[in-house]
Every structure is written in C-alpha cells, then in structure tokens.
View 1 (tube, rainbow, N blue to C red):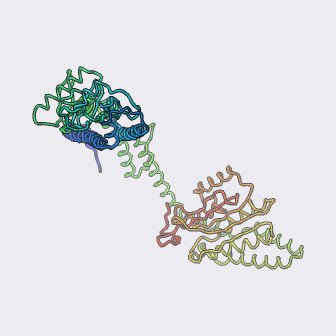
View 2: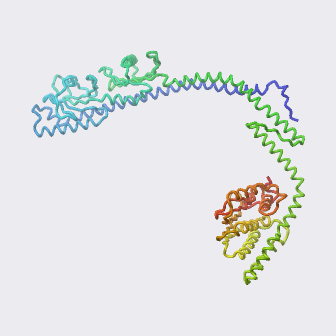
Length: 594
C-alpha cells in the first residue's frame, strides 16, 4: 500500500521547492545581467551607426541642396536680359527695359521657389546702383551686403552678414579688381535651416549645431549660447586630427553626453549632435539596478513562498490520499469540502461525484432485472391506450351518423393499420421507415377527424435511413401530444410540420406546430422535466418514455429536445446518434450509456 514516510524525509518538499525556485531565479538573473550589459554595448554600437548614417544623410542632403542653388545661380548668370540690363548705365525707364526687369523678376521668383532654404533672391546692378528682387521692383544696393559679396568668386560659399546667411555669384567670375556687371545674391533662411536640424534629434532629447569653420557663423536650437560655444570648441578640438567623423562620450558641465560630429569638405561646415547619455542608456542602467534588487527580493521570497505552498498543498493532499485509501477498502465515503476556494475544491467535488457515481452504478446493477421486467410490462400496457380506442370509436360513430361514409371507410382502414402495427409483435425495435409510416397513419386518422382545420406537411424520409432500427412508437406519441395540447384548442387554422435533417453526427426528426397556448415559462418547465427524467422506474409512458428509450438505445446525447418552433408553437427534436459511417448507431451494446 502507498505510504508517505514524512518523518524519514531529509530532502523535504520545502527544500525541494526552495531549490527549484533558486535553480530558476539565480540563472535567470545572472543571464539577464549579462544580456543587459551585452545589450548596452550592442545598443551603443547600433546608435553610433544610426547617428553616423543620419548625420551623413543630413550633410549630403544639405550639400545637394546648396549645390542645386549654385547651379541655378550659374544658369541665371548667363541670362541675356540680365547681361543687357547689367551693362547699361541708362535709367530703367523705357518700356523695353521695364519688360526686361519683369522677366528677371520672374526668374528670381522661380529661383526663390526652387528650395525651401532660400529666403530671398535678388540681383545687384552696380552700374545703375539698383537692386532687382523677387518681390521688390527696384531699390538701392545695400552697401554692407555689396561690400561683402562683390568680390566673392565661390558660388558654394555661405557667408554671414550680421545674423543673415548669403550665397552669391558675380559676373564676370574673375575678381581681378574689375567692377562686376551684376551680382546674383541668394539669402538663405536661417529659420528653415534651424528647423531642419530638429529632424536630426528631437529637442526634448538633445540638440545639434551646424557651424562654418572659417566664416564664424552657426545654426543651432540651443538657447544657452555659452553651452553652444563649449560644444563648438569641443568639436574643433576633435577635428584637429585626421578624423572628419566620429562619436565619442564626454562629460560637459558635470553631465555625460554622447556627441557625434561630421565635417563637410564641400561646404567647409561641421554638424555637431549631442544627446545626454541618460536619454539613451539611462533606462538600461536603471534596469540593471532593478535586476539586482529583484534578485535579492527573489531570494527572500523563495523561502516564504516555498513554506506557503507546502502548507497549502500538503494538508488537502493528505486528506485526498486518505479518502482514496477508504475507497480501496470499499468504503465509498465523500470528502468534506469545507469553505475552500481553490483547485482542491474542484478535486474534492470531482472525487465526491466519482464516489456517488460508483454508488449509483452499483445500485443500478441490483435494479437491472427488476427494471427490465417492469419496463416490458409498462411498454405492453402503453401500446394499447384504451382512451385512444374510445376516442376512435366515438369519432367513427359520429362519421356514420353524419353520413360521411367515404370518410368513415377511410377511417376504418387507418384504424386497422394502426392496431395491426401495435399488436403485430413484441419487438421494441423496428425500421425507421415503418415508424414513420405508422406516424403517417395516425396523422391520416386525425386529418379525417379535424378536416381542413389543420394543415399537415409530412416530408418524405431519406432512403438512406429507412432501415435504421429505432424504438417502436417514438414519433406517434409526440404527434398525439401536438394534436391534444396544441392543435386541438386552436381557434384559427393549425399547422403541423414533420421533417428530418442530419448534422454534427446526429440524425434528427423534427415535429413542429403553431400552438398558441405554450408560454416560455411552460416550455422551460417541460424541458426541465425532460432533463430530470432519470428516475424512469416510476414514469415510463408518454414523452419521457420516448426520451428514455431513445437514450438507452443510442447513448448519451440522443433523445428528445424541446425548443420554440419556427411556426410559433412547440418544436420537438428526436436526435439519433450516428456511428463513424454516418449512419445512426443501432447496436445498444456499443452505445454510450454515460
């Protein structure tokens, strides 16, 4: 016999649980720490690659944008109207000159619209002392701008005049002391350049600076000018070597930063991006600290959790083992459930249900012989219903008195078929074809009695199920109840529909009526009585008799089911369980008796 030598145990359940928990928690914590550190390095490498790729893309985009502006200025320089009006010292008053100015303004407007970085496009005409702008007709040449831009021969150079940035191209390109014929000037939008820097890094996370090495101008969103100068000094120090690009961690003003820089040889500018290290790797550092905290906390709760589980499981499990020992000794005693609200409550209920089921099965064996004898006696008694015979004779008498000889003749033929069916033999299993034919005979008798008051639709049976063996008289009692309780009391015209179907492993015979007396409460009561028909020793007639006989023959899941009919009255479904071949099971020895 199974025993639990608890006192002899050295490696107890508590020790096993603690060991199991530690064996899981400690390796997981160590692996998490290692993965965190490895992840930090990997993330740093990926961030470096991402930042360098992002900076390269921005610098390349800026170079392409300014190169495009230079190209457009070069195409503008060779404009015929601009050369003619540039070399002329005559006042611009004639109609022809005015048309040339309008053409130049139109091209300046197109130049301005070619890039979001252009704030204004204009042309200085030194010989006439005038300026033609895209949105201004004629104005004086600003002396500070002219002094800085007149000698510029590099169209890609970005120059600062005060807080404004300019690009220019003179004609002729040579600056050998000659006065230029005209100068094409493009003023860059510092606001748009500053806004473009926000696409590199979110201002909430960090900031960026774009500065020119020689021209001493810079574009940044940094509000702290002193900090911006510090960052620029740091970048210039990094560029003293051969490295034009890079990303390095540094400490500025007692705060750790990740700083990336990239130099553009074309523009002679440097892009500097700096982000506080905590914004990138801070969560990983916090996560590592929390791992250590959780590891210590896990070690503390491992012991408490093991003891709690030991106490929660050991006592109820011991009670269950004792109960199983009693079952082995033949004592079918239930376990006291108590007020538990856990899985053991379910186990106790299932155990008690098993014990009750075993006791019921043992009792059923003793009652089997008595049940068989009483069932056969009541079946024979229910086959000939004297009340039904009296009603048939009264109906026949009424037909004769009314002189309805033809109807009386057909009624006697139906009556003969009916009694020949129920008295032919004592076999309780017949082909479904004969059972449905008997039901049609019964409906034919009722049709003569009720006349045109009731419409009956009796769909033909599928030939594949004609030879299926079923209990005798399972359809006719349902039809009799329909006529007696649903169709008979109707004031209006009655409807009766008998049809069959096959689905989900069951073959079903449906009997539906349009009775008006059936309420939802009454339907629920009838269905409840049908489900509670297990005590069939005292009730073996009528609908319950039909349900129990089908269930015994075809197994659990077969029998009668009561629902609301599509016609409005009662719908009775006779369910016959099918075997693997798709046919209903007919061998009672193989049926599920559950």
